[in-house]
Length: 432
Image (cartoon, rainbow, N blue to C red; front, side):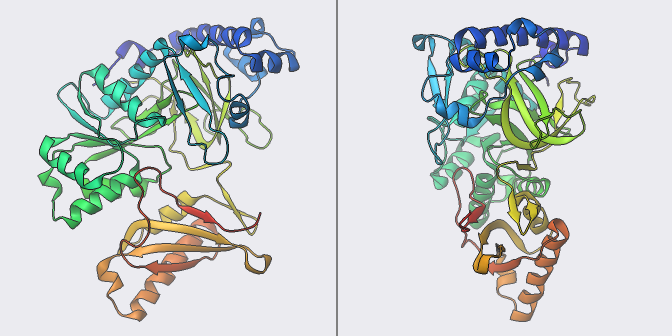
């Protein structure tokens, strides 16, 4: 089922014409109403009238998270503050948060793209959507909420946490679609398993999981535990929240809703735009937001864009699963390592739980990487020699994946911390 066939199945010619018109409008809006953009445009000697083709987007300045923090709280708004009907922020754990402001039109657009997102997961007005994303300043909860309401589905606004209640609601209400982070989905499945609840005893058919990086191996783990279709959603507070892109059931990449968000891939080192098919940093421009238009936002997320026909019939450009972040990658003894590589290696080994933590230290001025991995109950009760063999097997798998030797520590089942939201996978104890 497709939510908005006209927008989601548009021809290439129609889409390019629409994108250019919207790009010209949003650039003019930003230039005339946001001091930051007016100054940056003048610094680069560029004017909105210079945008004659989509390729002219390259002339415009990038926007970074630092730029948005410097404008805290309302410096990036393009409309009077009294026209902003809702605000959200990032967590602000590493400094001032970035603020995102929405007009009523922006909220309508958010509801639209989230309706598309949930429809891709099979949602209709007959479904009960158990929404475990956090409500409040975090965009996840309300984004799903608006999309579910637009479809006419029944939304259960349970938010994150209170896991025992989540399980009870899931069983009593007969929830059919689950929305949360993949790490929290794993935790929920673990609690269900501990309570002796079989997948057939719940009514879930699919899940929309995002807000953190996860691998194909993690998807398989979630699907097997819940007996559902686990689909990947992508979004950023700075752009709109969840609903920038979503996987359809073909699982061949995430459809970017490129009638509202224009994507580019750049080389994060030299900032040059890369052609489709090449891996680099995703850059996004909002085409329709009026409260806070964003020009060429550097997401720091590493992916690839592909313009290819999808069996589902949608014609949006697709992006590959995020493999890492240009500002999150670890440099260990000169080698670039992404946590997702380690996750992939771990989840390819039987007898391990899908819970791990990466600890980076620097004893004697040399980087060391320790990976703590939960063993299953059966494995942990085995004799020491067998555990040592498993440990070496994990170290070999990780070495094959990243090209470095690491120290693996097998820890007891359920001993690593669980998260109601984004999982903390890396603890960097180096003094960099």
